[in-house]
Image (tube, rainbow, N blue to C red; front, side, top):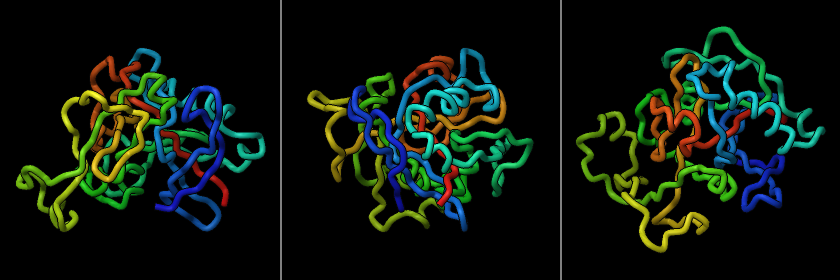
Length: 242
């Protein structure tokens, strides 16, 4: 996927800011939709109650503290104030409904599916693309990290036929390796056989909070500990001028 550098944020440590890398998920004539390559921080989605995106703590934090810490005034001028819509249900379309205006936001379910080249909620190829890891800073801030290993699918019969047809010829994928082994270190770089991952929030249209799992699947976060500060990370998105 195409990436760009834009803005600066704490990543390797909590003292020195570094350029933020963004994945370009959609391009239009004069703007592009970008998503941070890594999860950049760990803050609660809500302030203690199940909350829609419009009233969420994450929305307020992204458009106040994060935007001011990550971007200069000149860079903020390049970030578009967008109409952010969030559907209650996934169909085969982008979100409809009454919008709110945000510069920085979290992806919706629709964006997390369509912008990852899929039309299916459960698509293992798209799920693999959604896997990401926290920065060291996000990890230090409380984001949980999970070790993934690359290997053969253990039971491909459990996958839907549409997934099998779209899957790679080796039937290999990243999967959760149960338990962190002695000597494992989140600060080590990923390898071709092992990588780290984390969970990250999507914006929610109703009282239920949605996220992406360590293996890239979209799921409903119903556990109150997860909803508050249970190691789920923030992966910002935005529309910026070309």
